[in-house]
Amino acid sequence: MKRLIKADLYRIIHGKAIYVVFIIMLFSSILAAFGMSPPIVFSIASEPSSVTELEEKKEYDEYFKYLMKMPDDSDINITTIREHMLSFKYFKADKEILSGNLNLYYIIICLAVIIITSDFTSGSYKNAITITSNRKKYYNAKFITTALMTLFIHTVNTFIVCIVNHFINHGKSDSKLSEIAIIYLLHCFPLIGLSSLLVFLAFFFQKTAVFNSVAIPLCVGYQLITAIPSLLNIRTKLLTRFEMQSIISALAYLRTPDYIIPSLIYCMCMIVICYFAGLLYFTRAEIKS
Amino acid sequence: MNKTTGVDKMLETALKTEQLTKKYKDNTVLNNVDMTVYRGDIYGIIGRNGAGKTTMMKIFTGLTEKTEGDYTIFGKNSKEFSKVKHRIGYLIESPSFFSNLTCYQNLKYHAIQKGIADLGHIDEIIETVRLTKEKDKKFRRLSLGMKQRLGIALALLDDPDLVLLDEPINGIDPIGISEMRETFRKLNHERNMTFIISSHILSELYNTANRFLFIDHGKVLKEMTKQQLDNECRRCIVVKVSDSKKTSALLDNKLGITDYKVTDNNMIRIYNLDEETAFINRYLVNEGIEVSAIYESGVDIEEYFKSLVGADNK
Image (cartoon, rainbow over all chains, first blue to last red; front, side, top):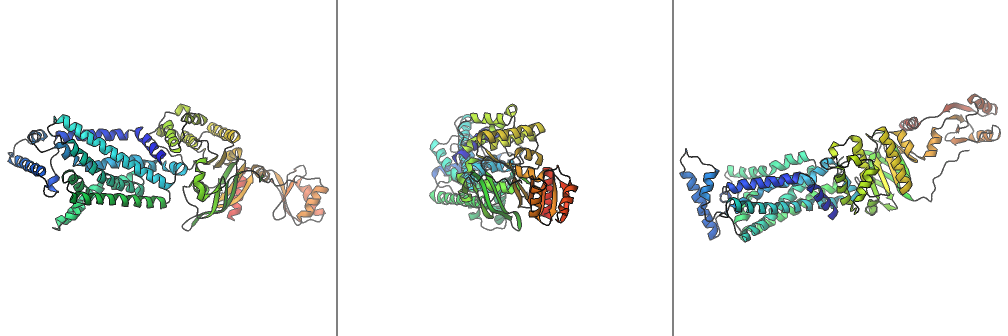
């Protein structure tokens, strides 16, 4: 299995796709850091649980007031908003950008394509299964490689966000390293959960085009589904509570055990269920030509 | 009299199947297949499209599961298959590689998977299949023949003892085919590599293999050595008689013909063509033997295959 992982890493390094992913990550981080990533988290999260969070909320309220006071004909753009937000004491752009880590879902789709579906599309998975391993080993290797690459991308993204934010905002909007480290660790769980889901989908659909057509709208699709009950005036707290964007955003801000523990358990369940569903399907399915 | 050439039973068996059957729901793709491949054989599998050749190879490589029966590879049965997997190289259907990687990178990717420590071996293999000039070309830029060669290179990558090649010369030009044939023979001769090759190009398979399996609709029609095939295809006089024992005695003692073979249903194939058909017919009738048919025969491998398939279809 180590050999399969090593071979996949060799292939990833010698392809262009991974470098394109890094460039996209860098570019989006620069944009987000410069635009001070407009706050969204309090629209979906519960009440602040600490003095710092309360202060943050006040700043957000002030931010909204600032926007409301702007004359109708005023030219509101990123630069003017940014100048105002740089005066905030508690607002931390890096934390704000990391709370939007769901964007990495689309990067993980790219990883699943590079690592798994390209194997199926080219047919080279048959080489691996035939000569070097059995299907279980092959599946495990792909599962682990995708998870490792997800963690790698998550790590690189965290570094890029912190460094880009530090330089672009001249250190005025930096969080403490310990805070960033906690967000990084907590976000590992939902991100591995998403990678497990995508591994399952990749093994289920196998061909890149079909996989993409399902995986890309899935995230938005789930968010739309969670919005339907609220349209009907039905309480949707539980449904939105376990929506990935909510989990990722809230784990960046609301670090109270009563929120963290159920979120992490939910993510762990997602990892286990997706792993076994993919394994069972792949080991029993007839190999397609 | 020609005696059927028995294969030396002391030879090591590379692959053996017993009543091997594969069914997809109600469709029986392989039906009680019995075959034996000895170490050092170049074993040709001949069959039409859908005969079951590729399915058979897929079973031997673990890409699909058998339904009934069993097979052994180097003495290990299907349950112990993982113990001998590393001794098998294969090319099944079209060669599958990553289009964005070069020939060398694709082979290195698989070499890492196989745990081949000596990466210099990749260059040797590339040279063996004559792809040195295309070594740094991306797979998607290769011609069909070159892709096929790369597939063969992968099959040979870690010096396997048994190589399974499904239609290996598809898309290769005539000179390339000749070079591949020489390569297979050389590896077979020098390294005692066993080859199982299926091909639609029967004449080419005839030039390469030393043993043959004819298969149609999942059933084995015949398994034979090249010598036996030559005898079957050789020009001869076929006589259908009422009493083959008496006819044999007359041929031996009276006419001095020893190069003949008694086949099923009182059929005798006389390979000595010095005597005319009419003379043999007249002589046997005069000796009181009822001759119900007598004719000259002799076919090439394609004709022979057609006759086998035709007989089976009837």
